[in-house]
Image (tube, rainbow, N blue to C red):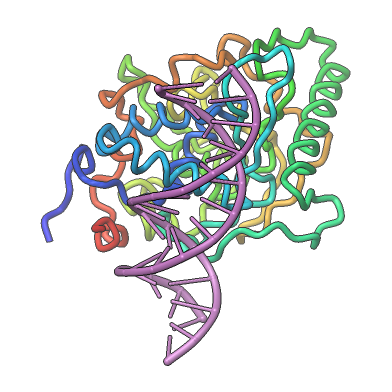
Length: 302
DNA sequence: GTCTGTTTACACTTAT
DNA sequence: ATAAGTGTAAACAGAC
């Protein structure tokens, strides 16, 4: 089997399910929510395969959004005109990809009432997210005394599902070794910066990305490294210095005293910020990172 | 008319 | 073998 090189998936179907792709798109956004059109754009920007037959895969993607409980629909506010709602990831769906395969989940995410604090219905999840966001912003304001940045458009109502500290959270999947257009490489695994050991399954899935060397060399995020995957500000992906478990556990709603993500730089919060359009030339492209994932090659065919 | 969102159905693949 | 997850197609309704 030839070892796939850079841009291997430029013409082929990427080894990601629509769920993975959608989650990537959502997680790539600082606000952790995107309208459908932006999800389309994200996928087409990064995976040329999806620039064709758009009707087919977009229909499938919409099907996935509606069908899977891991996606929650967040209605636009009256002052946020536009078509369609915003889509976010359910706060509790962080362990979907525990088997290390991002083409197929270990199990389908189903909303349960296992955690009394956790939202069960999508509508409750959306409300929960908004509440958490409000709490975090207030606590940040109280802690720093700083002005909250002006957050344009849809950003205000919807909190990032800041519970995504899990090593299998999409943000972690996409947030490695991002290079800004200028060419400066960043180590952007926020959980590593917080001392969060990386699960071995990731290294199995993407050894070139998550191999032992990469793990050992993982270092705290530089203060100069403001941007992570796809231009997402690293701060938005950080979750403070909270100590996190080494073993993947179901994601729980984050306590309201962790305002780390609130330090999003205001300029990064534009719904149309360039991070969604870095183009295939950007090494941040997950497909570029897949220079040779042995465990994924076999599932890349369709 | 187009886009978005929901639902159903079916075939296929993969995990158990 | 079976159940579950995924991809695709299609029909339909509602919003823009």
